[in-house]
Image: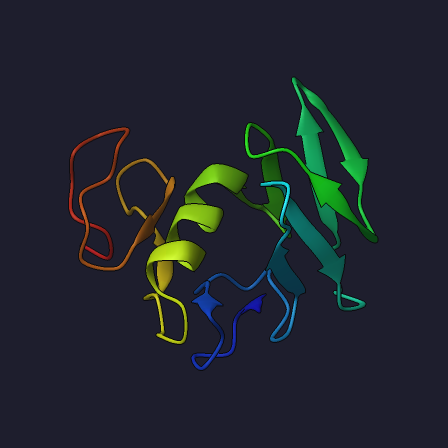
Length: 117
């Protein structure tokens, strides 16, 4: 589960994300299956600069997904799902310097600051 709920598998601390935004499942063929949970601001798969609404479907791990206004890489989500089966993965927040989504306490890949600081 991706959502604002602190108990979600991928909690995202952003008001554009619904409490229970989307369900994620890894498929046997190595793709990420995404189901939008009637989120307020939608779930989208990004193709370059074009956002395509996604209610339910499998996406390649090379895709970027947009939950509300937060963009995450499908590969990063799948990697965390594989590495953390049954564990809470940590909360995504926006970097205060550049607004890139980053795990709380981790370094931002864009500007190098620590997430949440």
